[in-house]
Image (tube, rainbow, N blue to C red; front, side, top):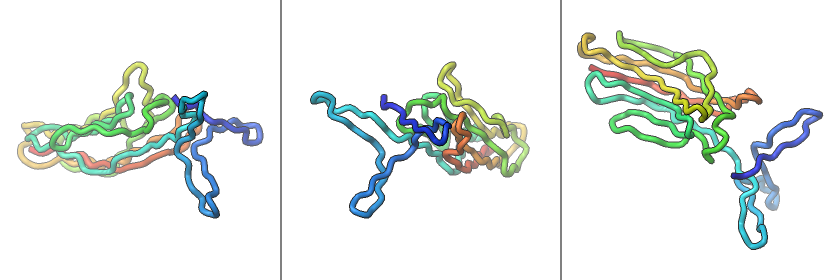
Length: 174
């Protein structure tokens, strides 16, 4: 695991998130820093990249939920046809340093929504936590669609800096 880089900002300890170098007049962002440790290459610093997938997640199965979750292991899971996973944090370390918040933008239909809204929720891996938002159209509602549009934000829990935002649309159809 790469070490964290901290600096003193007028008496306040701050974590360095990015490094830049002047390459013959061109600013270039450094994503990793490696050293030669007695003939062994070792990573001593790695930038943390946070990303969210904006998109529409529809379950094509009648009355199946449209679902999206951020998992404590650093993965995003979503059901849109076939279930898919991708990383929300790279490298997949220090997930406990982040929180997520979902806010409702719009809603249509008569279905059931599940998931916490308007509160910052920990993404800590211990105990294993999965933050899930889903839209589900009950069979008794008949044919049609239920659509929920949410804004998601991920922030650093101590610095309170929002690191990534995205908008997801959950669709359940009958």
